[in-house]
Length: 91
Image 1 (cartoon, helix red, strand yellow):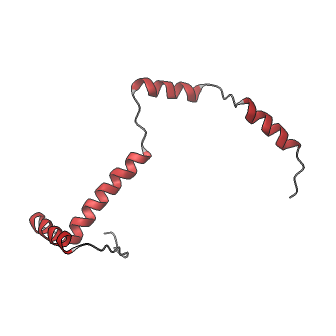
Image 2 (cartoon, rainbow, N blue to C red; image 1 turned 30 degrees about the horizontal axis):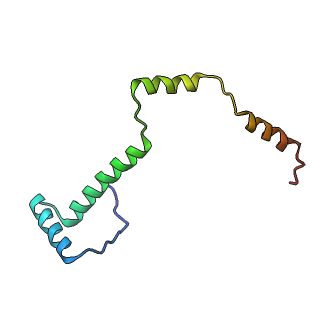
Image 3 (cartoon, one colour; image 1 turned 90 degrees about the horizontal axis):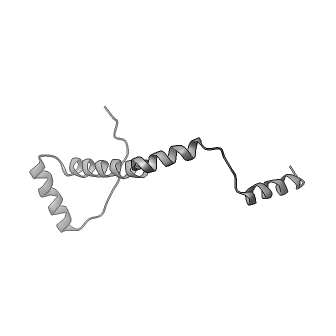
């Protein structure tokens, strides 16, 4: 079982509290369980949406082609790199 050793607090209006108490009662859970369950569900969905890239079949194929293609750095970047190598470094 996970140890719950952290606490978060939120300030809410009396009407919001009344609504949460009623909803928790209807669900048969405590207000804390109701809030935590919904918050975690939303958090998982949000993090997954930001960590996941969804591509169409055509876009996926283009992505794989780009990954498999040889690297061609921009000419300006190559020139800047060459200039930087000529600089004297003071370590």
